[in-house]
Length: 481
Image (cartoon, rainbow, N blue to C red; front, side, top):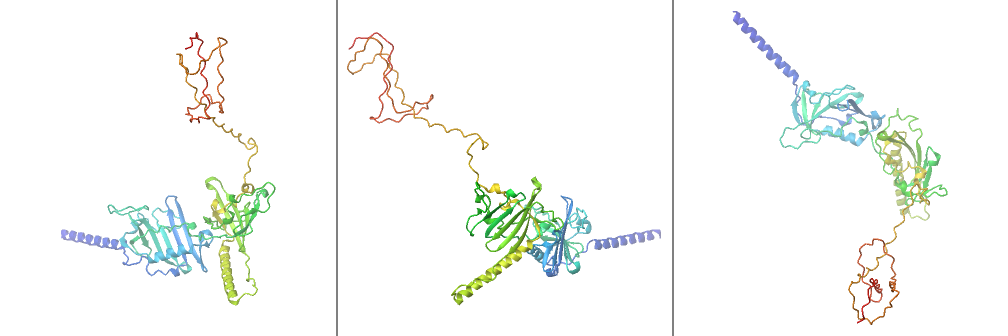
């Protein structure tokens, strides 16, 4: 009897363990239904706000960016609502809508941290959290939450490794209402980052056909103004002083701010009235009627050096085309249509560029294109009259040209008497005859150590006679032959 009871208890325990194991398994793994798209039935037009969040494990900081639509324009929340890059934002939404679901995996919440698929919480430093993209509709109602995790590591032998980690162009992803399903999607979403500067609209002013540039520097002596008479002419200093020689090549005034870019936007709370205190001012007018009132300033030094700029744009365009005497109707219509089209283009350009009014932008120094130069830095350098005053030693005199070497001296006379065929010459006994003077060729004396140069043969008519050999030591005269 006891054995029967014991067997029944063991059986009950086994049944209980099986039920619990089954329940735990079902609770731990709740797969989603297989589907084609990662975010099925996503209505991108219903999205009114996007939050991108991530914990940066390398820098131990929590990064976030908020993109929200106000009226008919998207803005970046972390940049005081500055206009967002609509093309980039729209591309992200369409990519998410068209993203294939990929391979289906089943991992419980305990494995999410290893795959970096935990949803990041605001301000919480969690190394198991991934990159979250939260799509919200009206009244901040959540439409979808997508978490992007680690790049997929391939175990395929011989497969080329991705430079971004893993073995291919795949990444783990998890959707908030998919239970325990983890998707292995084709794509790594490199351009989606929680960096506000990545999402701001980078289109800026575009100055063209400049007529005048007037610089008002904090120090009056550094101010200057340059103008030109037509669009193709050279700039000249408007108020040149005696002795000033303007160098038009030291500042690219014709193309200044022609295609400028900026790195970031300063938030409104930082860009207060004192932020641009001490800035240099520039007034730029164009032949088309635009006026740009610019301020720029440098802050910091060394690796912390940054340049900032603000701009206010106005335009003054002709309202009507001047009448032309005796103009034919067909010519008038054509000219009126061209004038209206150009006027519309200028007005649209003005409306676009006025969006930058009131903002302060971080730029690179080369963007200014010479506007930061002082008056003295735009002048041509004068040649120094006195080398000592110029701060340098006087130039060394040029070396004197080397004189051509004299013809080589004739060989020394032999010690034995020389028999000559010339008529006999009587030699007085004393005093000893002086050596005849050598001919005077029109050559300068050679240097002390002349270089061994073989002289070119002289013409027979111009060759100097060879110098007479030096007299030999006195010997007893021999009888003449």
